[in-house]
Length: 138
Image (cartoon, rainbow, N blue to C red):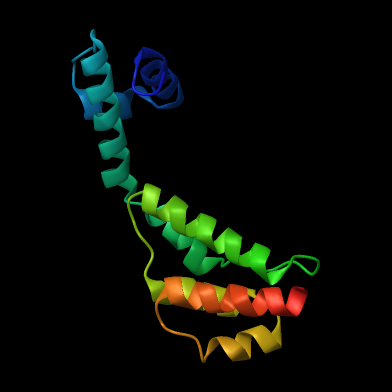
């Protein structure tokens, strides 16, 4: 059950005692409400400690690359997954970071050149890139 004792003990088994103690203090949850609050405290502790910086750093320092057999639309879907992972980790990516990752990793000159004519907002950029990819692939 998400937010219940099973969820709490699963997290507790994955984390060091130091992290748990920092997040919870000496309090041991007893009720469903306390378990849910403890899980939220752990999530906040990890979010503050890491701040999503690991996911963002991975994207910026090692942008995903499109494989030779991978379609451009699949590559865009992987960038969407990166965006979600970073947002969940507490550090939303800027549109410019996603667009730069696309241009670096697409490895298709036609798609890269066309991308300079796309809007600078990821949502709109993504729509134009997917539309073009479907035309090229289909």
